[in-house]
Length: 156
Image (cartoon, rainbow, N blue to C red; front, side, top):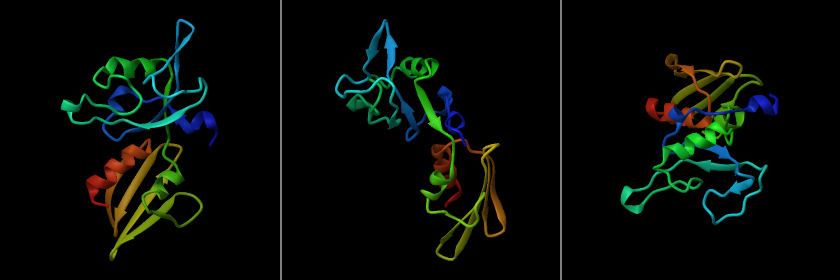
C-alpha cells in the first residue's frame, strides 16, 4: 500500500473518545498555529494522538486541541487536511492479539476454548468476524479505532 493510500481524512462523525488519529500544525497568516502552546512541533511532521474527553468539571481534553468542546477547531483541522487516520492494516489487527494464518487476509485468536477468525479485505475495508462457524460481523472497518469498538461490542 502506498503512503497516499495508507491514510485518509476522517469526517467529524468518526471522532469519539479513544479515536486514534494523527495531526500536524496548520499555518495561519504565515504563522504556525500551536495547538497547546506547550510542546514544540515541526511543521511537516505528523503527531499521533487519541481523542479524549475527561470529566467536564475538569475542563477536559485530549491532547491536541486547546478546547475540545470547540468542535469547530476539530473541523478546521480536518478541512485544512491537518488530520489523518491510518487505514486498518495487519499491524492494527495483530495489536488485538489476532495472529495471521496466511500471508493475505485471515487472522485467528483463541480465547480460552473459543475460536475467533477475522477476514480482512484491505482494498474495500471489508471485514468479516466469525466465532466458531457463526458470522458475528460483516461490514466496513476503516481504522483501528473502529475495529476496537466492534471487537468490544461482539465480546472478543
